[in-house]
Length: 346
Image (cartoon, rainbow, N blue to C red):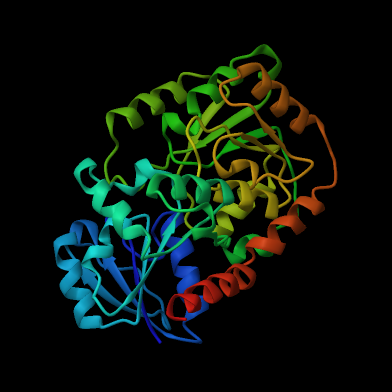
């Protein structure tokens, strides 16, 4: 069976891509021993793809308008789309179309005028989402029954499966993109409280998929540097480097202000046995395992209390690690995605 896996128009499908792209590539690796896999990738800015020996073949498109022609030339049995249900109309008529959702509907970039056609086509598509919460939201948005959207858990990188030993310091780590919706200002407000004066709040200066900082990025950089015990660090160069940061942190904070599809940072941190605090928005509750805490959003006192408790605690985090690996280890998540894709041609 030939499977064409199509990335979004935001990041290239390569090893430098964002969380969605890296999840998709690990799924491609899981499919490759069993099926012929072809990646179809937008390449923003025309930069060369970061590829390794043994990677699947890649067809590059410069514009979404070129996608239909590219897919016809590939002639796949199955097209695997991600966050773009509206692109089903660009797929060859004889191909089964499987759509996986990684984020909530606003991230799908469906134009208002395209929603009726997208909903009408949904009943003919094979649908999945990276969490149960997102699957329910996708079913509602597309007007299909909740049983029509499967859960396909994403995998974490192998670097988090075999992480360094924990050596926690007095550090609150926020490795998410530098955006307001990731709770940067909420964490800075906590950092300024007297009881956190000896705690470092470390934020990734991560602006991907933007190539240059936006006004929001510049404002947040200034806000971080204005707080004495807050700092920015350069985006990590590899998953292994990020695993080392998780292992040396006192607590990892996912204090998001908008719905998350699931939360790769939460999964990665727990796989590295790092204490974790998340806010209860979207799929993050499903990504948070005991003894870690998932707190109500928009509650600065609850956030401060949870961070302080995590910094002061020394509970065994092995249970949370085992829970993550049982569902999100590359082999486990890969097998489930493989089974789901195979169902499209039954």
